[in-house]
Amino acid sequence: MTDSNKKQTRRTTMKDIAEALQLDRTTVSKALAGKPGLAAKTRRLILETARQMGYKKDAFASSLMTGKNNILGLVLTDLTRGLFAPFVNSYQETARQEDYGVLLCNLEKSADGQAGAIMQLELLRQQRVSGITFVSNGTARIPEHYYDELLAEGIPFNIVESRSLIEGPGHIRFDHKGAGLELTRYLLGLGHRRIAFVTYSPRMHRHMTPKGRFEGYLEAMKEAGLAPITVFENQHYASTCGEEVQLAYRLLANAWESLPSPTAVIGANDAFALGALHYFKNRGISVPDDVSLAGFDDLYGEMAVPRMTSMRMPVFESGSLAARLLISRIRSGEEDKRDKLTWLDYTVTVRETTTPPKR
Image (cartoon, rainbow, N blue to C red; front, top):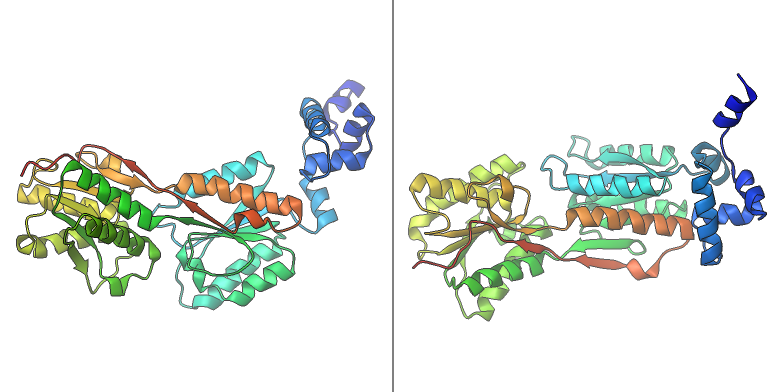
């Protein structure tokens, strides 16, 4: 191999950058690690020089010095529905941009319950992850002492969309009640007065998602001085989206004739709304001419025929935000008090299933 080839394959180091800029290595290290204490002009200069010189962080060497890898743990419990797929994508992309990798841990229900979940989580600690994000209500079954142990070991974490009330980390939550309120107000604004809501009964609301949406609906109907029209599932909690579609279909098949002629129907999520759509088609009830229809999440709105109005849950945005906040905490070495609780709003996506009432 020639000297020129050796020079081309040699890895650029922090020492090279420091010598090129006539700065000490500590200053360069701080800039590349994103640590505070440097003038903005100096930081920009170092980062730009590092980019031009083709600097790549040596994750292995860094882990030897800090006892941590440039890896984030991502713990979820509900991948089968696909709701959090956009979250995973944006979380990984944001981490990659900041030179972090991601280890995904899916805590599905198992025979050994909590013990099995803890065993999976221990794998993350063994990999010396720099931080962990816990996502969805299923993570609330993790015992509180586990979170205390993470803090004691200096492993920062944050929590997204969970009932967990652990103090210390940042929490990110979606405003489900606000979404129910906004969607109902939208239908009221179109002129609908008989609006039905299809969901699980209040006693079955194990998750805050459908509960919050239903509470928002009730508040909007009360504001308008209207009586709510509810279609409840009282027995079975569906474990998949397909089951929820079938569940909503059966609920309306059993209840529709006894309802006070709704001009609009809201499903607790897109799966419920799809079940309603199938029922209406089979009955020859036109959507939206006879009945307007809307759901939540915006997972399947584009796949419905006609395309369905839905409240889009900010899942993609929350993934990027969770990664950024966690990495910021890792780099600062201390808890960021500003992100104790962050609320994210839904947005209404109007499509072809909602229109002013014809009757």
